[in-house]
Image 1 (cartoon, helix red, strand yellow):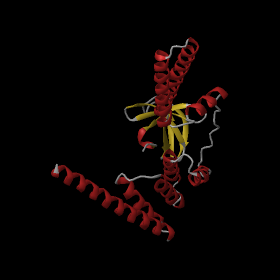
Image 2: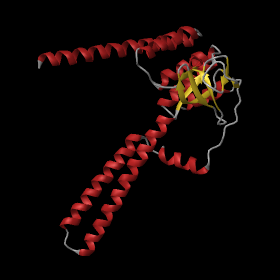
Image 3: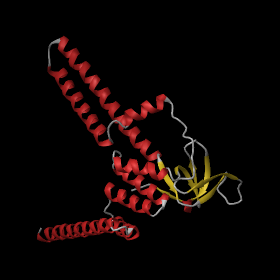
Image 4: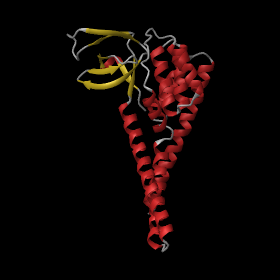
Length: 253
């Protein structure tokens, strides 16, 4: 028992030390940024990221350091990561727009159908944990109304409790389905940022293939599939092609 306590205490102390050290690095990065030393600020922020301590504010600051250095791909990449952690981070949203205005590629976005937009709005109205809570509450209500149905003698009330039980069951199943759809939607949406200054995309995953179109740094693409050293990507106008995997960097935490 004492040995386990000592191990937990050691883990806690190390965690606190890492947090304090990273706070110190973050503050030093802020000071470097304020002094206009953007390269040093980026180095300090990246050191925190490499240690696994990430946050929307940290990614946002990294995006700013690269934007100041005119490194468009890097700035877009970190603004996007900030928004993965905090979708409503208004400063990241605004600065991402500024960075995207410096891109070379201007791709016309293919608009989704009204049905798809409404479906996505419903699925992402709440996060996965909230939908799961709704499903659990629905299941509990289903059970409670069914228990009442079993013990109540009056026919009219029995019918009412049974109806409520069925409705709650349907709601619970519906909430579970929505949560599952959200998981699938997130898993299917793998995005990356083009880091090459200019890259030719190919019709097939080999260097002998014919050229499809050209992309430049900072362009966001959706990852469709991977084969050897190539990745099939889809751009905003729904065109697809193969790009060397080394030319893109996936947006993932």
